[in-house]
Image 1: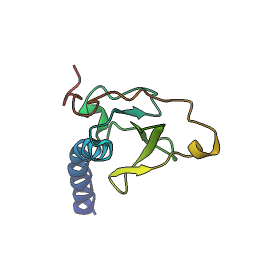
Image 2 (image 1 turned 90 degrees about the vertical axis):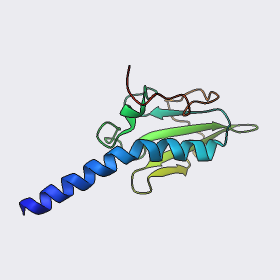
Image 3 (image 1 turned 180 degrees about the vertical axis):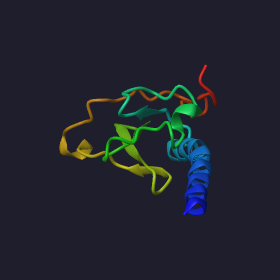
Image 4 (image 1 turned 45 degrees about the vertical axis):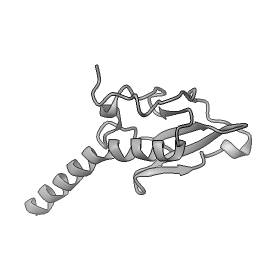
Length: 121
């Protein structure tokens, strides 16, 4: 029993350390150089660094979305939500397409995820 709990904690810790790189890579892959931003929805704030994107520090209270990626398209903002299960951003935001935009948004900027520091200042 103790071995199983220890192994579970070790795996969770390992995955928690990898998550920021997965999140940033997913954002960069989707944005493809276009202006974008990431918003932590429970805190209603932008991440200050990769530290804010770990499994242990990311928002987990909301069932619908933990983080939102907005990418500037030609005529509109393209919304994505973070999936822990997929370890990537997936298209869409709950209610976005039902004429009810999320109350929290961010303004896409050039190089958002590229300029995000590894550690909080």
